[in-house]
Length: 146
Image 1: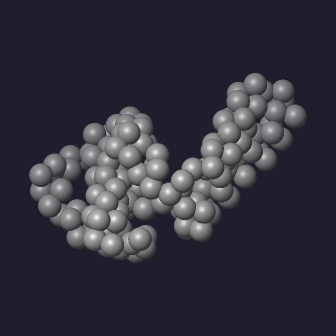
Image 2: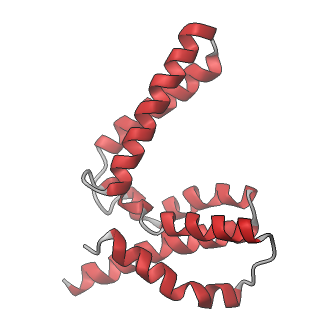
């Protein structure tokens, strides 16, 4: 399986071609943010691997989110905080039971995780989708050559 370094490397290798096809229209700050977010998306599908860097990062974020939201719920009786805590906990449990190259390595998950980026900008969506989809393609090609 290619490492996250390979996925990021390939993302940046093909990025100039993508930016040529979809010229960026926005601030430089948003462009840099979108490129970095796309790079993150290029190794995000490996969240289904228990020892991956992205999985460790997401586990920490989920743990902090669960603790924080439960604390807010206990102090403020906020059903919003309770909902965030429950959703975070369910997602954590879901991650413990996914198989590698299953749901997170599908076109559906690529769309599900990329579509919210359109609320930032169209180009952010394109770069996130590109990073995620490139990961799926590279893993598919790699699995066929082994």
